[in-house]
Amino acid sequence: MLNINNLSKVYKLKGKLIEAVKKFNLDVYPGSVYCFLGPNGAGKTTTIKMLCGLVAPATGEIVYNSTNIVKDNREFLTKIGVVLEGARNVHWRLTPFENVEYFRRLHGLNRDINYISEWINLVGLDKYKDTQCRFLSRGNQQKVAIACALSLNADVLLLDEPTLGLDMEISRQMMELIIKEKNKNKIIIITTHDPEFIERTADKIIIFKKGKVFKFDEPNKIIEKYGTEDKRFSSAYINLIRTLND
Ligand SMILES: Nc1ncnc2c1ncn2[C@@H]1O[C@H](COP(=O)(O)OP(=O)(O)OP(=O)(O)O)[C@@H](O)[C@H]1O
Ligand SMILES: [Mg+2]
Image (cartoon, rainbow, N blue to C red; front, side, top):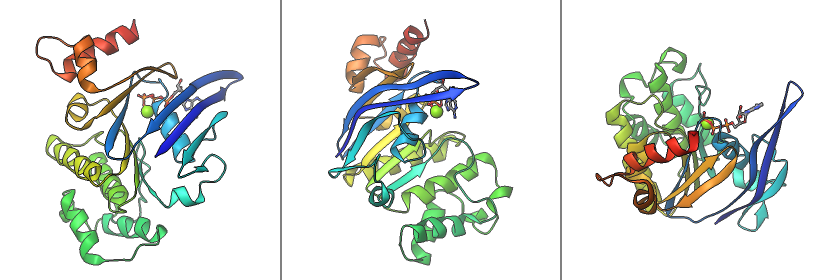
């Protein structure tokens, strides 16, 4: 279990203070997909970055297996698979195969050519497995990032907009992979703006508004409150985002 208590982050930009995350609390249990949603700039990525140690919190603690990982995350870093937003997840001069191998080695895992090839195949990159990542399209680079994160068989997955830039087919495959990981009792936190992704994978929804949790609920509760006749999460979510942007 992962306990996030009173987590805050303040950035300083050109002399101005920006409260990106304000006193965030959440208990994350294994075996469910937690989706961070909300408008641009609401604090989702900042929270993910605090979880994986890339941004130092201003206040608060994150506890994993009785260790406050804000103070000591050495063990935790060996347990996580991460996809960050943007295009800098993979090493540009390495091929997809070499990237997966590299990240597995960092986690102390063996080379296992067959296993790595399976992952390259699973994300549809067979054709490009020997091409340096800098020559791949944005979406294909994203697939490499996903293969790197998921092939670690990590206990905790932190995925910031994992389906960004993916075509529909691979995006759907990605959803299936997430559900498989969930069924292996992993801790999974995902940020996304993709309603179909949420509809198919999310068990718990955490909606951020200006750095605060605006709502924490199950998808069907959100449909009950904000939904339209079609009873789809995507319609409810559009209504909800409208109220947040007002
Ligand atoms: N390095 C930084 N320096 C200063 N301010 C930052 C920095 N990174 C983020 N911010 C600010 O912190 C706030 C939260 O940003 P964050 O990237 O966490 O939002 P987000 O919810 O992930 O948005 P999006 O949906 O657009 O990805 C925003 O106001 C943003 O401008
Ligand atoms: Mg973001």
